Length: 398
Image (tube, rainbow, N blue to C red; front, side, top):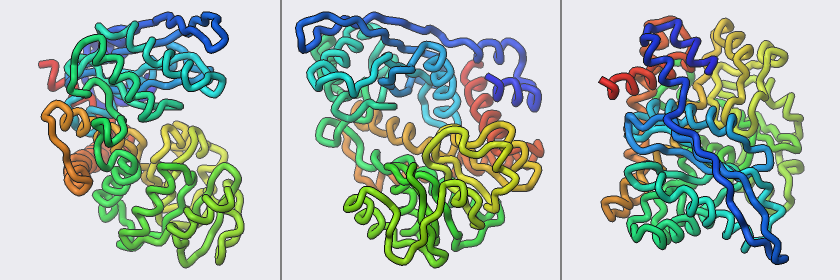
């Protein structure tokens, strides 16, 4: 809520509105009994926090993690309210989870747990009420189990209560690369305004699904991806990396290291590599007040959640280094989730080209509005993104 307090000082939204945004509409805790493979019964704690639905049904993922607890879920539900409003989609914010390490469960136990979560929350869920999606350690297959359970309990055959489903089970084309594609569209909409060249030198920290997709997309649009890294370290080639060959190299060897024509470097060295655009696409809090002064990027694009600490954000803003914030930069995922919901309700199937065209239109609009606000208020892009979100939410409350 620190970000809410910060923007409330930049623009007067009124005390009543700000106070309402501090609290979710409801937070639900459930106990889920699961019959284990050995015949014993184990009780798991689950959650669903529905923060705000003034713009549309609650929207947000379900995470399975040993450290998941209600306060984390509440904070993330608020974040989803903001993210959906930043993107401009007609959805509110929600989040769910179960306190569990899914690696300790068999596939059968995992399925029974997932169906149990739906059984306990069936009256809260629905295409016009609350629409969950995958998150940490949840998959399209888990969404399929949940859709099936919801259909058994309610008779609903639209599939629109859950998104992130497999393509063959009502999922949307373009969902797999949506975060990377959305991030690129946001960057492309702001590139000239941020004073970046037409052909940028790009450094990407993180080479999982989001980072590798982003690398392919930037390369395909004529930019030079000259360094990438994963948790083990990174590689660098000033003239650019061949991303398709690099993806195959990692599949073959399990590592980025040893790629032909590139030299190895540490994650610390990667973050400090001179470039036009630095893309943190892996972990939280990787750019801090300790390393922010050492960065030699002209701009940052946050594809990870929370990679830049508030202290580092302030340092970079004062240094004239714009940070395109996560709440805008990685909103492609939730936007295409909304598209999936829309297709399910209309019984339509859009092509990947249609999905991407719609995604670009939505994110271009929000990006331009956020940049304009940042100039008008002489504030950073993160603050202006929150201001846009709060304006859109408050407008619906009238």
